[in-house]
Length: 236
Image (cartoon, rainbow, N blue to C red; front, side, top):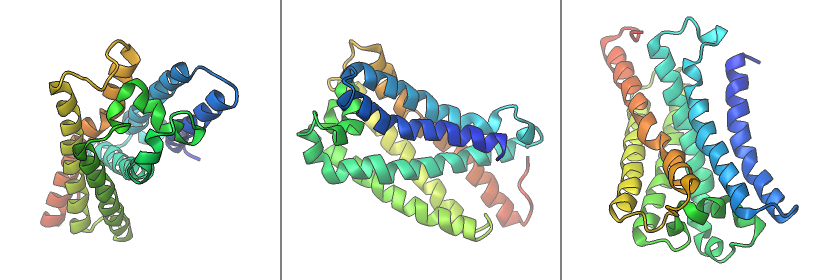
């Protein structure tokens, strides 16, 4: 297994496993609920950006990569991670938000309550706006997965699949920006602003990839589509 793959599997695996492990620690071994959630949020908030940045690490196998290849690697990794998030955590919340809201003391609901507690109380008492945003995100994930499958089946060459994935990145950027701004302009009423972790890690850092990474997707798609149109290889 390559060093790059080991780093990515290790980081994403740690993030994924931290959710059930945190639930077990709290509800089986009696760990502090808020403290465990803070650690979980730091693992997630730092693990995702680190995993996405691995294409730019000075690893032996990436040393000869061009800038274009590094951007493509980050873009595709972000898209895959994002679609997986939409179709797991967000889809689960969308389908079960009423049950989650009344199950704060249940182990099965802790993966959502670890974020709700201090990070964003809107997920316990969702408005129509939040439900619409999450519905849009889940739909975006379904569309994106279909486009990504078509992209890889075509040998990474199908222009329409590239364009659709770029379009999903537009939705990522719009919905994440709207999510941030709507809460910030209201004065952060649903975030525990007395807590550094809740404000800057749970609410801030954990959602940041969906504001930053789409720009890498736009760059990759622009170069890829231009190269396809011209019949040339992508520039480095």
